[in-house]
Length: 481
Ligand code: 4AD
Ligand code: MG
Image (cartoon, rainbow, N blue to C red):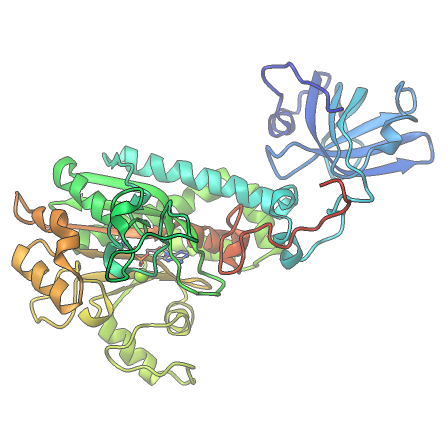
């Protein structure tokens, strides 16, 4: 039986460790990280409640009424309540500890089945237990950093007068062809209604037409920017590309500001300011977690974050990037020539080996970018920008948008996009059009950069990737389910 808790507010270990109030009586709730028993008839428990990386050391001695019956059975992963007094710790590792006066086991974890042990587990193994991996130091820290950065994103935009817009998750257009789309349907898949010519009859489906999960909130954000000025969306995006790489998810989170009466230069400035702001916020508010990553995951990340704050980002055009890549004294897997899309190896070469800091690349060939990007006057390149960072590659993609009705229509036709599907988007260029620009920051890739975690599957709670919906490789212990 799991015991009920009636306290309205739990006391958090992060506050107890910060305030160090020797002599104060507290009660904590959390999970056992470790237990060591000493011969002298007492035990050390490390209790973590998720409020911070550090655990609180609890001293439990045999005078506790349930010492033999419960405390000595307490295992890693069990949940407990401990009441006691904060005392100065004689140990070197901590200033304070909690002398237990009462320990109540809330939910025991059977050590024969609990998959997490004190030792380090591989990320691959932890991916098979996404419901439990958040109890490890690394995944707890990732969760806190994601939370802090989400808050900072809203704070940055709210402080700068941007309006938060909830763009739809289900859409009727495949939004810009940014990637393959997931289809949304309520059809019984074994009995899909067909028309006389054999085509699927979507008029019978839930929305009476084809529907998809959005790949980006941009197009709808543009509509709102052209009424509200500066807006942003921050939500999930879905891409069904069969990309099994350390930087692609089928479901990821994206921040997309969109700004009216603005050109590419403002979008670049806002992006650089946002990223610097988030770096600084992470250092000021998640110091312990970032230092943990620096120590155990990626020894370069702290230095790279600091550099990102202190130095201007590097800036080159696509054409200059191609020149640098052609002159590079190394072989790339994918050859480079003007007009080709930059692959991760190219992006990483530029921002790691050439500049060793965040790098902005502008003015890409129109052929490798979506129809909505504004053409440069010479007609071959578009007013686009990507921001690349070491270890990850592209974290931002953005552009000035085509605001001229006829040019946009022409570009759609050129790229084989059916203008009928985008009638409302075209109409924005008919009624009070204005120059506008925006970008998308890949939230999970940003978290990859600041944590130094190399695989994007390990920076999102429940990763969705081709052939993996998290619990597919379920480990079944007993025959009870
Ligand atoms: O460059 P992308 O495709 O740009 C857009 O979607 C635009 N509509 C954004 C805009 O202008 N409003 O995606 C933007 C960013 C990428 O730079 C990358 O960081 C991230 O989103 N991203 C992904 N992150 C994880 N998994 C994927 N499959 C991603 N695809 C893009
Ligand atoms: Mg892109």
